[in-house]
Length: 316
Ligand SMILES: [Zn+2]
Image (cartoon, rainbow, N blue to C red; front, side):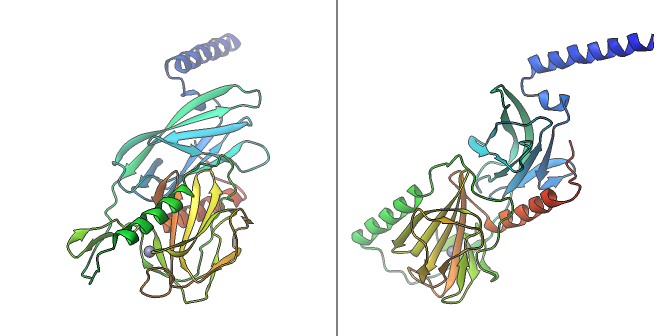
C-alpha cells in the first residue's frame, strides 16, 4: 500500500510538474536541484540599486552548453566558470536612470544536446540618489572646430565599446586599476554655472603623474586614442559586454588588439586632456551602460569568495 501511495504521489508530482511546465514555460528550474544565488541579496531577494552592479551565479544539476540571460531589455551573458559546465556567472548593470521596480531576469539554458529551457528570476531595482555637485567655472565657449573634435572623439570612444563580445575574457574577481582612494565618485550630477551637465560617468581615483595603472581583469585592448578632453585614453574589452576605460594617462604601454592579463601594468597615470591635476578617471561600461566601478569591485570580491569557498552556500 505504501508503495502504491508513493507511486500515486510521484505520478501526481510528475503530472503537476508537467502542468507547471506547460502553463509557465520557464518555471522548470525548481523541479531539479539547480539553484540560483544573487549578489547583493536582501532577505533572499535579488536587490540591485540604480547604476550599481549585481551578479548571479547559477549552479545547474546538469551541464549546459550555453546560458544566456536578458533583463531591462539588455543581454546578460553568463560565463561557464568551472569545467563541469554546471556553474555559470553573469554580472548585471542597470543604468543609473533605469526606472526602479520589479524586473524579470529571463535565462535560457542550452544543454549539450542542444535542447533549450527557460526560467525567470525576479530582480528588484532600487532607487539610488546620486549627489549633486554645483560648480562655478570661468568657461570659454567651444569653437565650432573644437566642438566637432569633441564629438568625433566621443563617437570613436563609444564605438570602441559598443560591440557585445560573446566570449568572456574576465575572471570572476576584479582588481582596482590604482591603489589610491576615490576622489570623485560615480554618478555625481554636475551643475556648472547653473546649467545641468552630463553626470560623472566614471570614478576618479587619486594617482600621481607616472603611477602604474593596471588592467582590472583579462581582456583585449579595444582602442588606444588621444582625445581633446580625455587625453591619452585606453579601453579594454573584457568580453560579455564589459569594457574598462582609462583617461588622462601620461603613457600607454599596450596597443589596440593586444591581449592583457588581470593586474598587468597597461599605462601610467597623468593629466593629459582636460584635467585639473593628475588622477585616473576610470569607467566601466556593461552592455552599453556606464555602471559604478566600485560597486562591481565589491560585488566581484564577494562572488570570488563564494566561488573559491570550500563549501559554497548556494541557496535555491
Ligand atoms: Zn572623472
